[in-house]
Amino acid sequence: MVKNRKIFKICVIGSGYVGLVAAACFSKLGNKVICVDKDRNKISSLKKGVVPNYEAGLDKLVKEGVKKKHLFFTSAVSEGVQKSDIIFIAVGTPSKDTGEADLSAIEDVARYIAGHLNSYKLIVEKSTVPVRTGKKIRETIKRYSKKGVEFDVASNPEFLREGRAVNDFLSPDRIVLGVESKRAENILKALYKPVKAPVLVTDINTAELIKHASNSFLAAKISFINSVSLICEETGSDIEKVALGMGMDKRIGREFLDAGIGFGGSCFPKDVSAFIQIAKKAGVEFRILEEVKKVNSGQKRHFVEKIKEELWTLKDKKIGVLGVSFKPDTDDIRDSPAVDIINMLLSEGTKIKVYDPKAVPKARKVLGGVTFCKDVYSTAKDADCIALLTEWEEFRKLDFKKLKSLMKYPFLADGRNFLDKNLMESLGFKYTGIGR
Ligand code: UDX
Image (cartoon, rainbow, N blue to C red):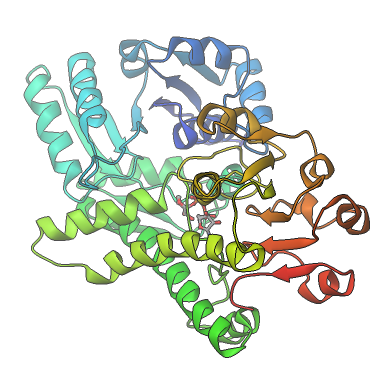
């Protein structure tokens, strides 16, 4: 906690990946935070300090916050709203079939807030929302609240990555504040004072747009390098070196140039689709982003084809899958490319064993017809192929000699270019990666 600074009374509505991290981190900064969720089971676990998702460092922060009485949990929005000065909205904005974001949870929350406004409140969007949502929130709260109660709406998009969420929240590259009054700007600047990061103040529409544009740009960067990787495969070039060479240009940067089986997770696929729809509504055809999506799903099919090329027919072939989460250091399997690839392989008649350090409990709920293993070696037993689909650090330090001796045919399909190709080949594996 930082001395001599104002302690804010904060309510965070929605205790998902973003909401819970925000609540825990704001409490860590010394504020009093009430975290609200309509899921009563989740709330009662959180009251005991039990975090529903695996996220490094979050457990500790939540336990500390609860113990020090800086962090409270409730399923009553009324309590959260009435006892707080700043209310963050961090509920989900899932995709509709059209790709558009479903804003019904946001609208519900806006109405609840309106019904319980008892003094000036600053209402801040944290969820990723389409441009002009802030305006709708303001109109909704005005419509359903008592006359004369003052409030402001602001946008403060969150850029944290899963797996590094706590660190990203407390040490972000930038803090974006979309505001429409000096009062809101001052409150948010004071709240974020202990966080050392450049602050960009904009209007609300602009802040909302920054979030969709940033995620879509990063997704485009990944699809770009994945397209280049296909050229590398045809021309005998090495995508790893191409990415390195490109990344040495400061204007490009090396990050997000890792070719592989494509991006997944709860943000990129959803946000790219939502941004296409936002553009359409604004009369703009964002064709690049349509291609970004196509390239991304093409990578999964391409990877399955590479396995097929080596094993010829896939029926009854045994494949050991390493990693099912959409990226390492998380148990999140939402929109994980690994899940899609496993399903594609299953539809070709393969027999699949799966190992993941954290994501197995979640994977069990969505993957039928596969065997889950307790470690890498039991996954490899009698396998015709090991498919590495998530780059968990522990996969780098395996006993590869043992792994090879367990397999029926030592074929490594590395969907993340994670293993050292030369080393694997020198150990006698048949190795295939992406774009090299
Ligand atoms: C992303 C954004 O990075 C974050 O700023 C935003 O707040 C939420 O969405 P996250 O979904 O947690 O974060 O994961 P991220 O680390 O960005 O990776 C997204 C996907 O892209 C993963 O599936 C990852 O494997 C893939 N990826 C990433 C690549 O395929 N290549 C890369 O070079 C980088």
